[in-house]
Length: 346
Image 1: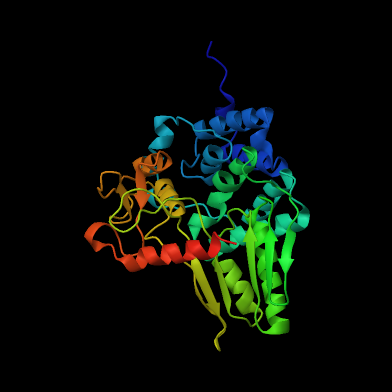
Image 2 (image 1 turned 180 degrees about the horizontal axis):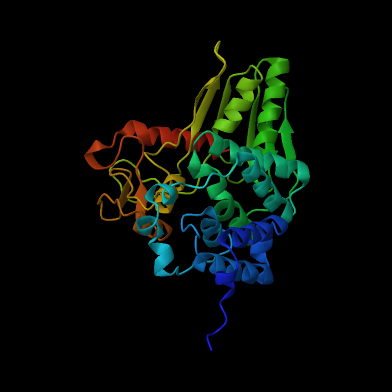
């Protein structure tokens, strides 16, 4: 007699996918629960083997980046794009912004972030995705925020202390909480001072990664102010004609109200590229553009996966604005240095 059919053959791909989404929706902190991870992994395997499963489905990416599940799909699934309807297989799944934001908020809540702050954190991240800055949105939720909270590098809910204050200035201590709620607090304080006294400047120490700097500049323009924000970051940029990572991708970002329906905002790192963008290249499976990264031998690198590994080991560095080698200009690195001096000393 023939063996009974597997569950994957008896349940439709759509039903299995619905089950996966249910696991995600009902367990926002499930990546930390061994039972939930095991349940998700088993269901994802079933879905991957089911007839009609789309190998480009976003649930596989969620499984890999959030739950740590990477499947070895059967050849039939791997070749679905070439053997099936090419037009249909090439379609990318579309996830609504509101769904993404709620997912991120639920994750922050599961870590103990207060509801108000979780709303703010998820709003900062989803704004990056809305602006097409994929390097700083949902893709950063796990590696920058979840992993760092898991490792005790930053904390879900710390008080924000005002160390010193005048009518137009303030020094704030974020106590290593989430920069995603510390940043908005500081910018709103600066805006309040500017509205009352004409100018407001708030510096913050012991903060952490605060997402896209443009979010804060736009907070100011939305309230009729000129906004300026900047931050320092971990060493990743080589100095002009150097190869050792010594400075961060320290952004200096401006926002100005205009007579149009939108403000003028410039939000960019002081490097040709930054790590989040290289991580995006890795997700897309493409090379890093030439001139953005050099290794400790001074050789331009374009091998994205190798770059990410060597950056951790300090064997690769990003190049400052202007590019690498004889294309490097001192002006780019001086921008990096200026941003560092203004944000790392208070």
